[in-house]
Image (cartoon, rainbow, N blue to C red; front, side, top):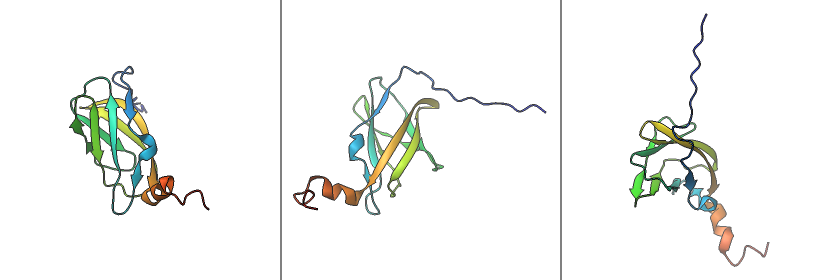
Length: 114
């Protein structure tokens, strides 16, 4: 019996995709996960496939190098995502999503009192 092995590799390992404001990624029941990716190389048809989700999320292009995503994810947690340009896998990112309620204590005057 022959078992085929399919190996997925990055289309171009020199392409670097960065998550903008990775420390400010929040989600809640009212506000789903929203994030922006940056790439020095101009990309045309960017999408992400987030682990555990069946449907890819298409980017809204903001300028030449920024790609904005709106998802339906409303739970905090760590999510792994494959980033594609067209059909080509160009990067793998990790989204550390915090609860929207955690954001409230980050900058208010009361956070140091307790």
